[in-house]
Image 1 (cartoon, rainbow, N blue to C red):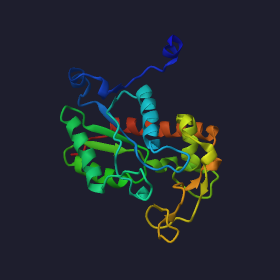
Image 2: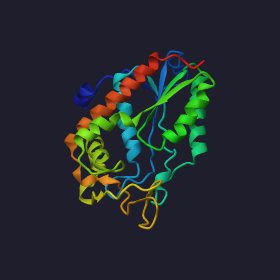
Image 3: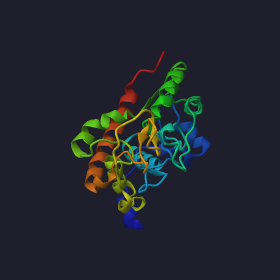
Length: 254
């Protein structure tokens, strides 16, 4: 136990949930950058990954941010806009407007006490459709909100991943989970499901205009390795840290 404590990386950031309101009052200043992790706790990720996969991703990168950035990390938002997976039992998305308003309300509440710069650490793709209108609404109140740009990972994924196509529970995401939470990955159930991309989300119906995926995977999870995951996790961490520090220096909306 003592060895584990000695080896633990020191934190630069703090978790809002672990503060008293008096401590929060001191931590939430106009210069504070607040980070809000966003990761679904109920969203299908194929037969080999758990529904809480995005939440585990968010918590892992939250910890990396706490180690490296002088920020206040708010509690994770575990429901949001994920319409692509409604045909798969357990997937529980919000509609676009509630997802947008949830973020606006959380950020506005925090900003009331000082912080005007907020970074949403998201590992989802469709979340952007609700985060962008939330950003626009908050800007009207002089609050600067930014969120993770997942397309910044494209060069690294192109270098490491050999699957013909895919973006969900695929080679890259499964590789990352082999690093982040290997006990939640069952590689004996990993599959290749690379049907041509259709319109909208994934579908279990082969006659649908959507992307056909009986497994809920879009990509080739069988190609995942821990070595790929280590490089992908490191690259994603660097992107998030860079974006947070850029936000810290960015001018507020007028």
